[in-house]
Length: 246
Length: 246
Image (spheres, helix red, strand yellow):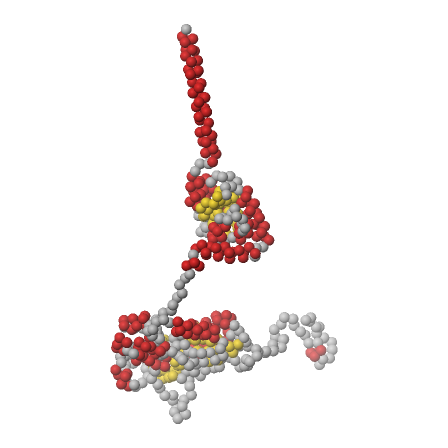
């Protein structure tokens, strides 16, 4: 587009209307690019902010304290281990606890590194709700329970942390999702629906073609070779998931 | 529930926290019985036995040559030109040595070796696999020459010479053994491997054997001539001495 001349001699009212100066290869004069999203994508598709402190119950002033309850991390996730939108996500491989700074890190990284005009992302974990207490340094045992420091979210193995979908491919997103997964305190990997289907098919194939009649669950549940003497309550309860889940 | 917890042993420390991180402590090893049960409960899958006919070495070579036949159809005009040149050199030379480049030393040594060979009358050429494959594809004379070329690698070095003297190339190859590795060669239309070439080099040249043959065939005739002339010569000698004494 050629530059038009700026009229010096003329009516002052018509000057900007008829002959406005246009700049070639400029960035500030141009109108904003029209936002055209792929079909089906919501407008507000960035990760929302997560509250670090949950609301107190209505009949209490302060949030009540709770025991450690690490049982909520043990075992394998059986409900939230699938992808709702059947696209991509980050899956935890081991149990752990997520704090406020982990949530903020994930949120910043996804919103800045991934193009949210071509993708959307959602949380698959609860905001921190579990109160975590500490007694303080160099304190003796006793004299009451420790005070509340912050809140955490317990995560089980195979849990989905965030889910991402859109018009980008897995190869394009993998490196970014890996960097986000590395920021978590437990081992996590980016997954896609294809990978999950592949692992599921492998597991089913092994189960069908397994010639060995002895199964771990059968051995533990039926106290073969008096193994209950050496096993735990939770070894028996988690026997259905395999010998590695304790 | 409460009664069961009292009877079982202390819960395992799999999901314990150390330095505010989970699963950083090495877990206690399981009792031997439970580890034994883990091993015997592993899935066992049937593996199909390999077909001995398909795994035979000769079948593999045959399939390889058949598959490589496709490369000839993808050859460019430059490859065809080079194949013609290769054919000319092969038919006009008495020695054709196959070598491989050893890339341990810097490439300047390779050029020095190349210049030395060329000074001594050798034609030093480097061809990819497709060029001799194109040149000798449907030729029954060089049927045995193709498999070693196709099994070596991507590029081999060919040394052509018009004389039948093997001592000279061996001297040069010994000097540049860090650059070039001799694999085999063609001498007067006969294929030899490295050991065969070494044995051949130790033999004297064919002219030596031809001279010996000629001398052996001429020996009886010269011997009979000398035998027939011997009494006459003796007689003349005695007569001379008698005359002188008189």
